[in-house]
Image (cartoon, rainbow, N blue to C red):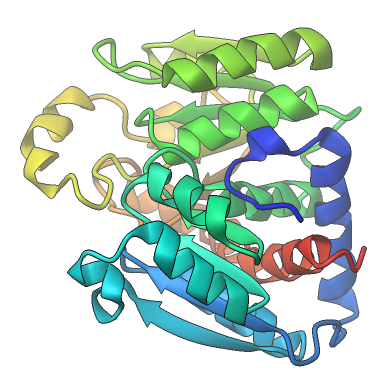
Length: 303
């Protein structure tokens, strides 16, 4: 049995297999998980993650159970390992959207069902699967390489994109403020994996340097859930990091913009640039459904 907590645990072949199968399921939907049950545990609010997982299991022939952490005994102090041994013995999959990645690791250790990371403060792997599908559909992969720029916070999306690029052998440039750092565990993994895959990883503190000659531009909110008290300081830290017309001019002329949403216009992206790229951004959001379908089938060994 395999869990899906971080892309670090998956090979290039694993990731590409999931993406290829997502394409097939998008073109030819099938009910491959009859009577399977997915438990969804949310410590953080969600729009796209809940929609993607609930629709995915339903359209595959199974059913979903929505569990708010406040409604569980977890909210009253029950050990995670006890909740995991109960829920993980009653369902076929567990998706968790958590405040602390360690909670996922602990749950997975005791669960008899595969555990999927719907988001943690460190990683957002299903988002990257959706992005990869979108990049492939928009023809931005050339000679098994994608030229990517990520501009913004050194957050879970940034971490997951670094990991994916290192595994897949892509070229990615990261632009973050000077007083921000990449997670040490993530960076160590990326450096070692890049030596094997041939990935080109660059770190900048100026968005224009990161954006030069890129085909895919990615940004994300500067203020993640739970960081609302830091909003004022973060806005100051990220002054000059907005993706606007001047920024996009540094990328290739036909570059696409990806954003995991929700987007805060006037902060990480301008209104004009967001609307110009809104078609691909909302396709990216919907693609979460198809990669989740493929992921569930992969973990169920249907592929």
